[in-house]
Length: 365
Image (cartoon, rainbow, N blue to C red):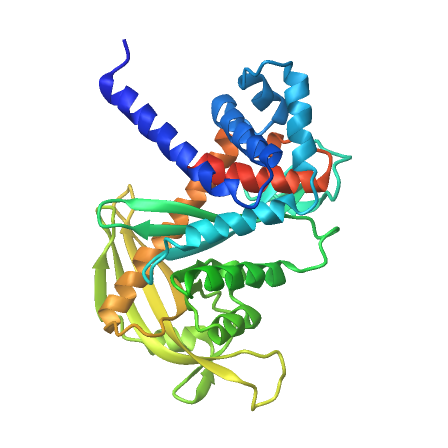
């Protein structure tokens, strides 16, 4: 006999599942809507993004081959992935508030044994550090704290082949950021890893008046008190007057903050445009298993328009929000492993984009 709590949880999950799909009745034909619902049910039941395996789990009054053909036919529709993404952004962005953390994560989808899939190129496998055939991924997810728990809201997932796409990854990024701004009223705080520390990204975010945190690569000079200085000189001149305890015992952070200016042009002129930012410098102290102290430095470039935080509040919020990015990376890894993203065997690029984006949204729910 099933546990009563388990039965209630199942009913609650099913209710949320069907409530989520009701939003997709608008803007989609009945066959498209049924295909989306069937695909998600199949993914969740089979634990795989394989269309054939999903079809086998649907138990429809037809052969699984016919069910799979129906799903394939809808996934191949032109602009199907864009319509799914636009509707998902419209739904999810309504829930964002000014303190919602919006994590941008660049990843990859490795197809090491594939040779004939459309648009394959060499990508860096984050697990092994080696290159292999595959596709780039740009995932954006919001983390909203409602006071009781942290809610994860998938916003978009773009599978990209640089062979077939006209836009670069950064152009695609700002297309998504602009969509989020429009649908949310420019709410939320964007969080980026080191790969997005570039003057083009910073300039675009400042022009949009976005709040953001970017992990600083410490390779570019910044202007401090009117003088361009390398990172190490700025770090040495910064008093680490704030201490914040870490989540793990024996770990703490000694932090400081500087008001700096960053160049937002690749032109070598002395009069190149600059933007005002805050540089949070962090010295992590940790006691290892042998009892010895370890030290690690890292820094963040950030901007928070319209927020009157003290320096201590700003530093605490930066550390808290950036730590969420690591949790999101773990979640992405679990989704990729548990639902077999890298086992998708769709030959057409359009079908692959549609299946990837939709499976991301439905599996995280």
